[in-house]
Image (cartoon, rainbow, N blue to C red):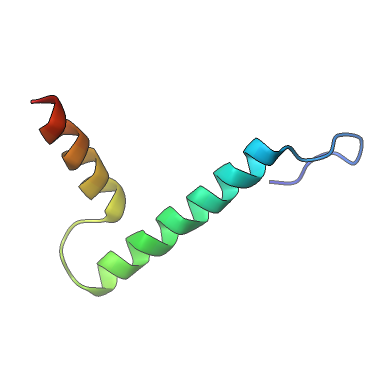
Length: 52
């Protein structure tokens, strides 16, 4: 994401970009392991299991 020159990027934006990059990296790593499930699916299932 590119911010306009008049507005400096916020720390929250930086954290979100780092988190998104890490999730993409974890998704790719899990795909290489051929588990049939990505990291985001794993987290979603984990959240649902705690809700049940």
